[in-house]
Image (tube, rainbow, N blue to C red; front, side, top):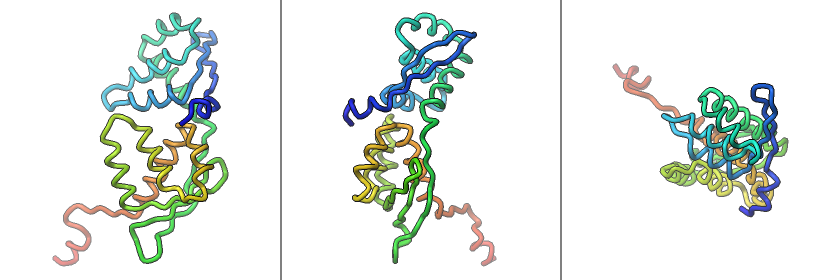
Length: 196
């Protein structure tokens, strides 16, 4: 994705810490780095690094001292993420099974009030799952969204996917919508109980 295109998704954010204003510039690259650093056993460092990487250079030393306290880093990092992604509105409008094929689904997703169609297949699901094997959380979602959108919506959706929060939200909605019809039973299943 072109750097110029992504620059329009940069967001200046002011966070007040101990009654003092601190200026942050959250960029798509900083947001993606934050996502990729998140681990089940370490939430502190991604928040710390996001704060340190996006604060204005003249306030960097002061902020680093403040965010060395884990609660401050978590609080400020969470505020930056929430503020960066708050304008992104994504919802699932419709889910249709394709004629004669229960495994393919046409999913209509509303992004900022406009509907876009995606055709989700077992192959696209497997590719997404396999892509998640690396440490990058953004690229599998971008590839999924851009790979299953119907051709007539591709150009417009690609522009919207320039905002990484949109990409992550659409990817999540697609996976959840596609998985909705899957019923998993542990033994004994309802069918097994009826036989006994």
